[in-house]
Image 1 (cartoon, rainbow, N blue to C red):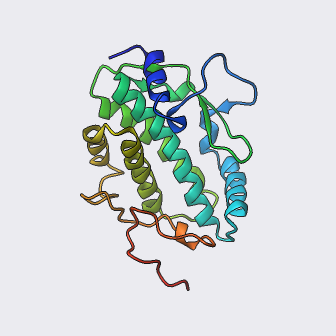
Image 2 (spheres, helix red, strand yellow):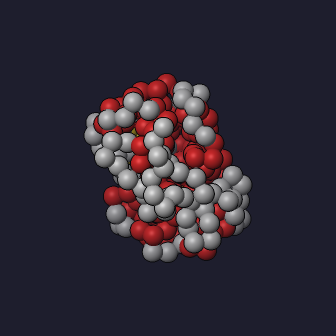
Length: 215
């Protein structure tokens, strides 16, 4: 196990999605709790919907949530697997540049007293993704199962990029609410609805073999 700062740096070396902003807190960053606010999601869903060219808010909400979940899981899993620590998301800040991906400023990481899986579940699922999903559902009707599937798919994607952490991810996927979101082969049991965006197709882990007929 390594120190918290070193664990974050090791994760950052994997790639941009695993990286956090170093140094003093820059201007323009907001407390991470605001990522769960309905006001944030109302704006974000409109922005993503315009970019995708879709008039369906639930499609935009799903794509936007998947992106945030992927960033959180990448940083958290990379820090845990490569440094044995869990990022301090409770005191973290975020910024979303126009047309860019979510930037995260994380003050450090903590080596947990207990199992890594339990600490990651509390940090990512309970404290971040669960209230985040509630914020989305306060703005637009999106199925809870879809959002759980997105969270599970984002975790599996982080494992693939990292090339490690499969056992840790398996423990996380066996805990509610993620349990049952993926099959044993990594295929989703729900659909993120991306295929409904103009010009889009199915994701690699989609529950469907071909796009359903549009009604």
